[in-house]
Image 1 (spheres, helix red, strand yellow):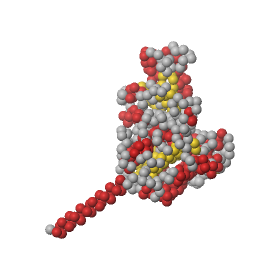
Image 2 (cartoon, rainbow, N blue to C red):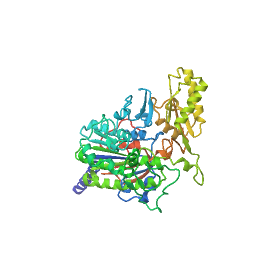
Image 3 (cartoon, one colour):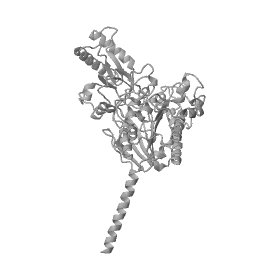
Length: 538
């Protein structure tokens, strides 16, 4: 009897120990969270470029962390502003309000850039802010509960830095388009260490430098194809030289791996000067690697430049992880890698690919607006100097209600616009904003596709009519682009890495909207009413 009792007590003690260990491992909050957003990094890139990577960068994170290979955005307008808003709010555009990079906001009457202060023109660059973001970010919730939490966001693009950080970040920095150095706006406090750091590490130290190819031709893509663009101030053949001065110097620098190195150096300086990850309150560092998008637009996803750039990014990431392991300790940080959107192939290449060419092409928004205004003026007998189309910010068409003054004229304009767009070469989806919001799939579109479009549609910011191009069609003149609901634009990587993160490779369908609630769980914060789910990463 005594022996049985001892055995029971021993088993009970062992179970309590195991439960306690598991609970402590799960509940131990990270001292530092690092979010790395590689702009325009398509979800297949890690496996596609696996033979080119070292074991210390992307592959270390993918092979030793929780790696989700089937991560897709569940909204349709896959552009920089919309994607970065999703990353840290966990909410799709219909909730975040960030429906595109530019949109007409009916509430303020502003034709807005996503991170401008409404009606702040003509000097909107001095008033950049998160005002138009309608939902709180993870960082905002952390700050509410832990006011001492230090949060710093740095990116090449202002919209990446601002929309990841939210409304309560201590420091938010982005690249000045004229100098290449980092700047901020009056909405944020300027770091005390920034001026001194930039004097010692100016961006222009990279001007005049040359970006050489590292890969052998036997493993690299063709160095040049006629459909791709050119390096600013240069051409499309390696090596690429960053101009020493002039209008192309900053742009070329921003398209080169030198800007990625500079960004991560700034991130390390922020960690050290702000003493991030050194106390019990969770700090958050956001880095927006926008270089991958700038270069991707110019050269496309199948270019040698993209291959070479990601090889550099891999080395820089490996060095950064080594720094974090040494100075923060891997058990004390969690690192997340994802992207704001993917990218379509260059349409001129898709049109001639073998064995079966695609129906592919480009849509000019300015041409479309001019033709549509001309049609409506003629058929509705509208005065020549009055444009019935106020704005076209893809995917939205907004009418000018001061021109279409009564319901009859408005309805006629709406019907004629829908007919025009449905018959326009390259356009695949057209519907009224109201029908989309009300869930009326009148065209019997694929339900998943319709849901993505609905998730991108906001009643005050999506105009009167919504339209999207056909698959393999893009907006604009950049050689490659994005912004559609198709898989090449929705598919992005998602990896959690660091302290107590499970080693697993999952092929289940997940979304970048899952990042914020999952990290919230790690810091014991519940994010209300998100579109994301909590992933099992511990």
